[in-house]
Length: 133
Ligand SMILES: Nc1nc2c([nH]c(=O)n2[C@H]2C[C@H](O)[C@@H](COP(=O)(O)OP(=O)(O)OP(=O)(O)O)O2)c(=O)[nH]1
Image 1 (tube, rainbow, N blue to C red):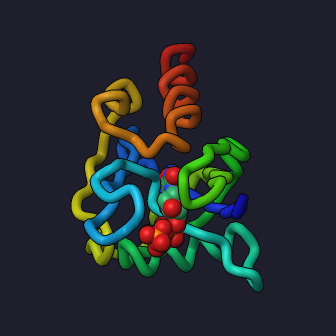
Image 2 (cartoon, protein in one colour; image 1 turned 30 degrees about the vertical axis):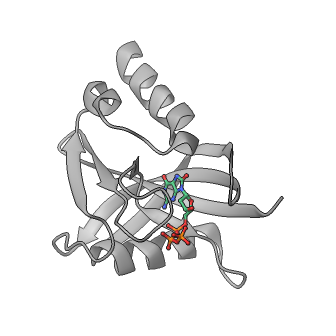
């Protein structure tokens, strides 16, 4: 089984979280995710995340603490291991290059979306943290 290490950004602005809908022509098209992507061989997870966010959303982010480690899901194309990081927007306006849509949602609204299966444990934890605040 091919193992695919993926990093995702939990980007928060005004208490809302950026959710991104995967574009047509990609795996899992139409499902929602945290923007990010596969870690390449020569990269640290943080470098990969900054690169992917720049490519996908045309913004610079500062990658802060790891949020949730290794949510795993076995798809027919391989096993995705998703680690998410809290990120801060540093510069730029969001322009979509790969996604078909984005939404900024409060954590209690996240369950409205049809998330990629690997993201569901992370989404549930985000909702739970908020409930406990
Ligand atoms: N970026 C990101 N990818 C995710 C998440 N959840 C999840 O299952 N994935 C999957 C989708 C992809 O198969 C893979 C990430 O790869 P990628 O974003 O670099 O892939 P891609 O669209 O460029 O290419 P492909 O998978 O269509 O070949 O991990 C998530 O929250 N963020």
